[in-house]
Image (cartoon, rainbow, N blue to C red):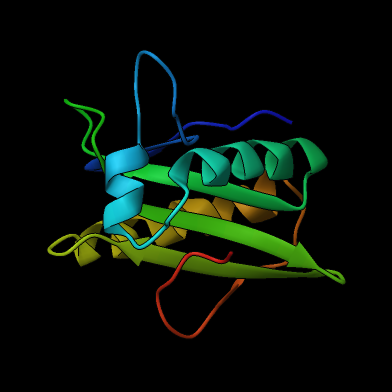
Length: 122
């Protein structure tokens, strides 16, 4: 499966990008991801394998990544995680509902449980 875009009210969710048109690398570094290009490739592979689903939460007019949110599946469970840049906690709070509904309705996963803490999995 390829990344699916989600409209989450004031925020736009899309797959991660690191190409000649859009690069999420600077924002990913700000979130503490040391090798953002590798992280984007791993995210794409996880979508393909349908094991983990990561979205960039973006400002809709500029496409700038302000936060990450994702669902990871393990042994029949689904875990929701998120990580926001400073000042953008509202973006992840707003995105949680649409992402959970997508996980259940489109992916057929059980309702994701929120992981404690806000950080992107390695």
